Length: 160
Image 1 (spheres, rainbow, N blue to C red):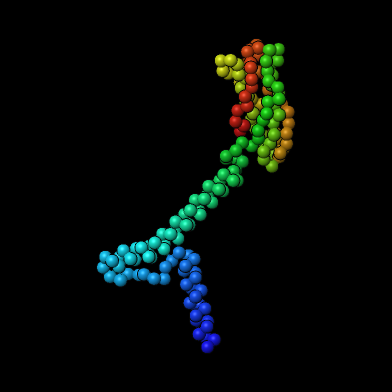
Image 2 (cartoon, rainbow, N blue to C red):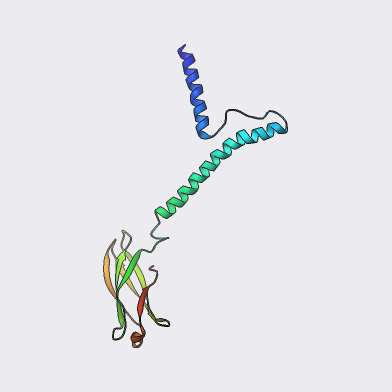
């Protein structure tokens, strides 16, 4: 009597596993064209629904993984900078506050464009070594200091 319960329990567990994985215990090939369509719809449907679930999971985890945890070396710059003061009439340099976004020491180039009414007036960059998560203030001088009066704003470029 105990053996009969074990067999029934095993049969129920197998059925539940098949149901949860998307496989059907009914169906199979039973002959000509109706057997083929039945086989495709029951067996193929079960497999394809299982596969489509897997595809959805891998697709969403792939997207979620790449957007939720970007790699600092490939998708985002290792640091960011904010313009504290910009060049202008009587001032031939800009002051930037540069912050490391990575945990390791890194040397970065910070490009700066001095812009006027008609676009870029001058460009320069500064190379700085930052410890992990460090913030430092740096000065970026204009190459063509005689054009300082034309500068209206400063724009930080992509830091590499």
